[in-house]
Image 1 (cartoon, rainbow, N blue to C red):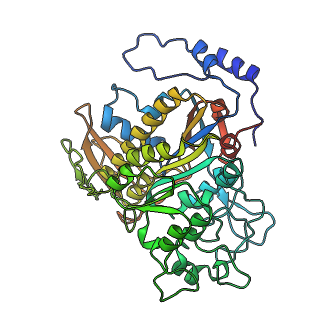
Image 2: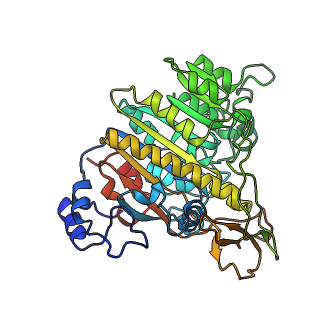
Image 3: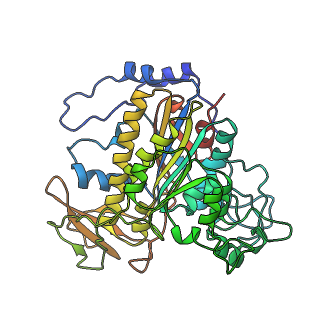
Length: 460
């Protein structure tokens, strides 16, 4: 882990002009000197509240695609681009083997990357806040993998978890469960795939991700995944008792549409299950294709009917409204999950819409931080992905799509890591991280993803 920068060292870095506050657009004849603003933004105190916003699969390329489509090259910067302190995170994971030393893996999935910032520890693909072993199907040890949620709850803080995926998916599951395989969402999944970790195992395990989320007593848990929570509890197969029933018996109010979420203002903890699987995306799909590609220089993304599902922003607002009542502060993790999922599917418009959802949520978090300066806001990604902007006159191999940006110009995006349109995969490039608030300056520089854990829990 890189050493913590002192205030003096940061001031020296600022004086050297290595970091900027805000964004300089092309029309500015002379970029401003931001040294004074940077000094004023440095705050070494411990934050009362933390809002961590994750763009799943949101590398620099995905951010740039979203910015050009929404605002154009010369238009306003994204909210994410306005955060004062920026850096990058290396996302490598570990490969299973005999141990105790494990080879690095350079193209991780979301489970070990989410585990990295949730625990400060490395692990292997598919594994959530649990140590290594000889293989994915062999459970490791949970010892030493205390998560951000567990630490913050022990300090008396309220805890919130928001995602547009199934709420039991890898990123929201990492701080709220310990399990060897990310596919063990509900009790039935766990009985099949992780039997040694089921609650009915001998000795008893911690159970499925859904059961562990209830056992963690998260104050707010919002997203998709109703079908996982509707599975029968361990030991109750064939009876009507499900994880939803288990949550209700543990003091949760269950809401299933945006009207119920907006209306609820009671004392109970809130479990929002807004879709049987992943929540719907903002835009209808535009799936890349081989030559001549999909879309055109005049193609615009079209809004999808999301029915009664809340947006990412609506869920985040509801979560903050509930969490901020706690006098000891709160810790909230928010994920725009389908930047990644639509990147996998070569769906350019689906991907762009989820980047837009994330950015409007970042703008809201920044406004909250201005009114509550003891709040730390961090925006980052779990791993990078496949989409790349290429010349609109280029005929790239593989799959591509073209849309018209806010500039009125064509933008062509190529997907080149899979042999089928729906088979794109992650890449191993570093990902951006940006922050504002107490200890935000600790994200500066090129760091390992595990370093973020220490900033999230508040350096002493």
